[in-house]
Length: 123
Image 1 (cartoon, rainbow, N blue to C red):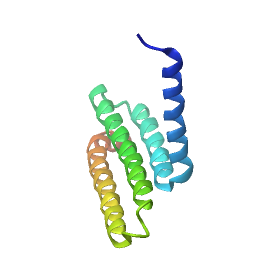
Image 2 (tube, one colour):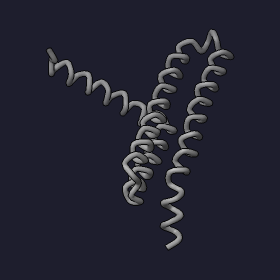
Image 3 (cartoon, helix red, strand yellow):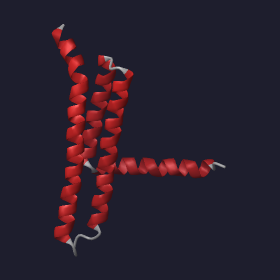
Image 4 (cartoon, rainbow, N blue to C red):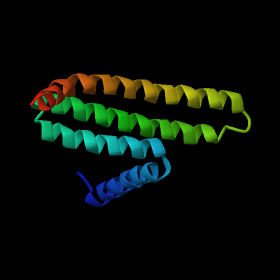
């Protein structure tokens, strides 16, 4: 049986996590702004349903990965004084993961949007 009060609390905690990340992580804010622009462009240009699904999956993936990066960074900060060089390396690697995923999303997005933008500019 689903307990609505407990479910409501879960959603509240999830929103607190999103708000925390948005307020404190510049990259997350930038990615959210880019996501909003891409979503508007997606509907303005009339992408096919399958393309919209891919774009929304990529956006969700990147934002989720950025939040995961934030979790790892906060956890590693607990270890920082004792393991400073290792902590820095792990943070750099995690940042590289997010960068690589973002680069991949950018390439896929360009492949999806290019024909629509080309058609729009050709008119």
